[in-house]
Image (cartoon, rainbow, N blue to C red; front, top):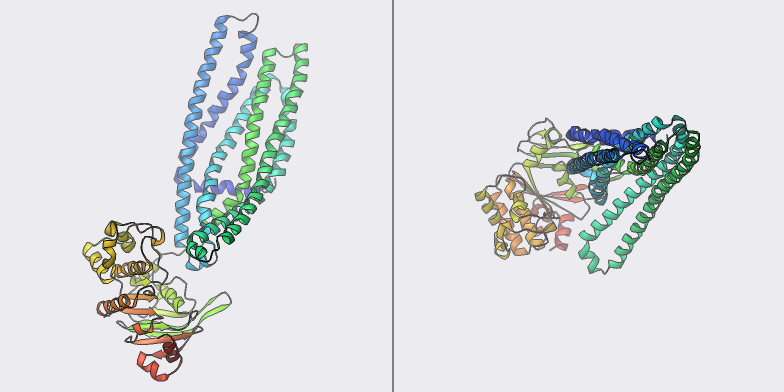
Length: 573
């Protein structure tokens, strides 16, 4: 069968993803056996209804007995069908939730460089849309097995009544096999394409939401709407292909069923005339074959849908198999000490961003990284907190290569404040402490030092105010102060300021700088700065250009050189 290996792999993936829910799923799954027996028995009961109950020799007692049997069997079928359907759907949702949790965990622990290669919309689509398909497919697996058992049970009744007729009817099985093969592989291929397109749609929507201010400012609504419409058209075209494949299979199966049914009428009539079958036996046989057609139709639809899921399966389990940062790896605990950067070189693909950088920072020193954009200043800070692996050269803290430290202990050693502030749809307090233990005295101290306290009165619920998605309830300058408070609350011995005060006015910037001078006397402070008036009293300033340090020294020493720093300072006054 085309794609048989892929089909087996998908089933294995689904089974493994069930985790602790395997036993519950198998229990509800096992109820398919009694359901198929009940359905088969209902088909068999047609024979005594016509041969005994409704025959000229039948009695009212016989009719009542058969009627009560039908009611009893129907009630038992109702109970089993309801209990199984409820249980399996509940299990499917719980399994999907667990899978989403695993995927989100994976995304949070992916290496930072992975996000330069993957679209956020694609990742979001996998966690939401693809997992929804997974939830649906687990129900479809149940349908496949239930319908197969139902088919076998009904065929058993048919064989019981007439082996010859049943074997003739089974002559359509090769045709059914051909139908599934014919539609299955195209369904799988188009399913993969559609899942990829949906990821593009999700990414476009996210870009629109995040860039709504720029889009409105430049009047680019029609442009972005046009891009989304093109992607939607592509997505719809792909789905049309899938729907065409799915909807073509079911009526074809029904048509084959009608051919079989017509054949049975002709052959059955001959058998009644010759006395080989009773009318009740023929009607029971017809009911069995007629009831088989519906399970076969549902089975075909489910199998075709199952093949379309292969694309989602590849995306989900491909992501789960991605390499992730091992924060719990048994390595040394990071210790505060001098920082030594030696011959540090780093590239993104073919583009070399840092070229043999050497920096030494003693405990308690304040150093600044300055220079034109694209010089590698921010990248150095990212390497220091191990967002990217150091592959050429070395960074040491307290005499030990940072690659030998556990990432968790290293990042607890360093507080980072970036120019792009990330705030979450949560309270001001939770945005500052994140997952750290709450200490009221410490919290009051950091909101005072970071000047967050100055705008607390303007917030409706004080520190319990929800800041909104990406901090939309406060200004850019206020958001930066919250970000600074977050770093101060970590109380780390090394602080990195990457344009951390760019949105603050000169007065607030000066107050923050004065606080840093008094509070960070015995800590290392590394600042990426464009406001050069704030770093004049720093111990050393490193001027980077095209990934190289071309000048270093104190502000006074660099100004006396009258070189690149002097020119840069003069322009940026």
